[in-house]
Length: 138
Image (cartoon, rainbow, N blue to C red; front, top):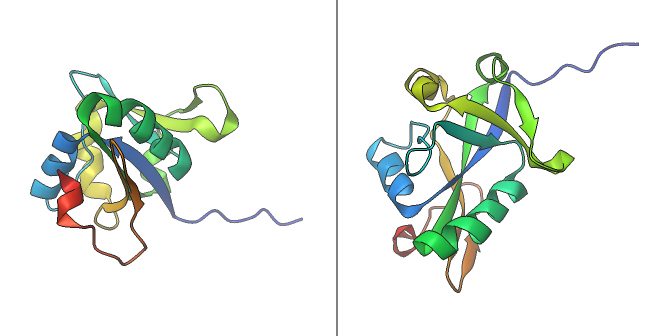
């Protein structure tokens, strides 16, 4: 029986507050943002829905908005970090030390892509190839 080949790149998702999204935009959408408020780790989610849950339930109440970006990284670069779960199988995430983000960011195979935006009363998803509305970015 042949093993199923895994793709060379992996899509990961990061929930961002408005300040992190603004910093990502200033970086030309080519960086991975550090954690908020002195967090020592950046948590990159394996599932978009999990990142969206974090954005809606944690970031919107605290910051008034929450965003989710898709990051494409070579599997060889992310596999050095442990894949952990908070509670359920769909809550898998890579825990990357903040001090290593500067070396991991340049490994992005494409620009980060905004895939979801949430505000206090509204939520939006951006279609692949679509452009986010400037008004949603705070």
